[in-house]
Image 1 (spheres, rainbow, N blue to C red):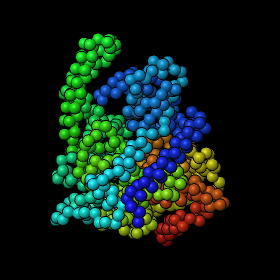
Image 2: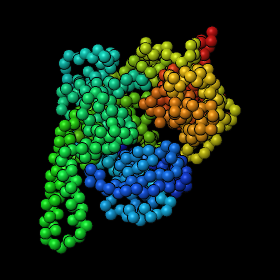
Image 3: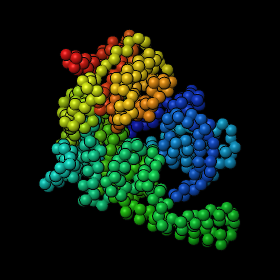
Length: 613
C-alpha cells in the first residue's frame, strides 16, 4: 500500500495534468468557437450595457452590467467566477440576478473606456483561482507534521480504524432507523463519518439533523459543498430550522431570503456600518486630492485607515461570533475572511462530486469531517483522460467508504419514487438494499398506469455537432415531445394545471437539450404547460425530482457506440428523478449491447408485460 505522502504527491501530479488539459481545452474552445456560439452555450453575454459603479460593503469596487439580447438563454455565470469584460481585463462575478450582473473590478479598471466600447461582451475566463487554491491545500497537507491535519491525512490513507466515542445512542422518533443511525454515527465519530444517501432517501434531512445535534455540543461548525447551489440548499434548510447561518459568498438565486444570511448583507446591516462607510468615503475623497507630499495628508490618511480597520474587525468579529454555521463552497472556504479560523467539525455535502484536493481546502481548518453524498451518482468532472485513468475522479468519500465501512451509514428508505421505478436502481447500484416508503410505493398519476416505459426510437441515426455539444438525434427529439403530448392528453389539461403535475425532460447531450427546448417553444400544444416543464442535462437535474421524467438517450448507430452513456452513475441520476412516471426513449439495437441497458430494457419490458397480463 502506498504511503499517504506518495498518494498525495501522485494526486498533485494528476491535478496538474487536469489543469493543463482543461486550460488547453478552454483555449481551443475560445479560439475556435465564435462569440454567438459562446452566448448560446451560456458562457458569454453579448451585447451588454454598462450600469453604475459603486463600492460594496466589503469595500470592493463593483460594476453593474446588463445583457440586452438572448435574455432567455440559461447561462453559467455565478458568484466567484472569473470573466473578461471586452478587451479591458479580468473581473470577478459578485452576483447575477436575472439579466443583471455585478462584477468586482480592480480600483484602476478603465470603466469609462469600457462604457464607451460598442458591442461589449462579457465572457467566462479560465478558472485559475480554484486550481491555485487546490494546489495550495495539497501542498499544506503534504507538508503537515505532528498536527491534526497530518493525523487525518495518514488515517485516510491507511486501514487503521477511525476513532469513535462511546455513549448511548440518541433517539429521533421523526427519523427512520437508518437516518437515526447516521446521526448517531456522526455524533460518535472522532475522526470521520460517511452518510451515503441514494436518491430520495432524505440525505439533506439527515444532514440537517446531524448538524443541529452537533451544535448542541459545539459552538460553531463549518458546512461546505462542491457547488454554490448545494451550499444554498443546505443553508436554506438550516435557516428554516432557526439556525444562524453565515454564508460566505453570494447565492445563485438572488432573493431576500437567500441574501439575508450572506456575509455581505449582514455586514452592511450592522449598526456600525454607516460610520465605516463614511470613513471609507473620506479615505477615497482624500486620495483623490493626491497631495501625497503633504505630511498632514499622510497622518490623516493613516488615522482614517486605522479607524476603518478597527471598525471592520469589530463588525467581522461580531458576525462570526454570532453565527452557528459558517457555509461556503469548498474553494470558498479558502477565503481570506476565514484566515486563522479553526472548527471542530466540518460537514461536506455533495462529497461524492468533489475532487479530493478540493476537500482538503476546508479540512485543514477542522478536527473531524462528515462526508455526505452518493458515489453511485454524479462523479467529479475530469476532462483529462490520463488523469481520469490515474484515479483523479476517485473521491475522498469513495475511498474512505471502501477502506472504513464501519464509519458509513447507507440510508435505506426512499420517499420519492414508485417502487417499480426505484427497484432497478436499488438492485443494480445498491445491492437491493434500498426500499420504498409505504407512502410512495404505489404512487401513480393514472389508475392502472405503467410507471416505466421504454419507447424504441430507431428511425434516424444520431448526428455529431462538435466536441463541446456532443450529439443530437432530431427524430428522437420529435418522438420525445409527441410521447409527452400523448401522455398529457390521457391525463387531461384541467388536472395537469390544477395539480401542477411537473415534468423533467432529460438528455445526456447538450445539443439534444437545446434542440428539445427549441421544439418545445414552437409546439402550441405545450404553451399552457411550459411553466411546468424543465429541459436539461443529467447534471442539471442532480438533486431534483419531478412527477414525470422523460429521458432521450440520443445514441443510434450500427456500431453500438454509446460514448459517455457508459458512465452508469449519470444514468442512475437520470432514472431516479421521477416520482410517478419514467419514460425512456432510445434505440434498443444500439444501447442493449451494453449489459446495463440490456438489463434495464428487459426489466421495463417485464413490468409492462406483468401490468398488461
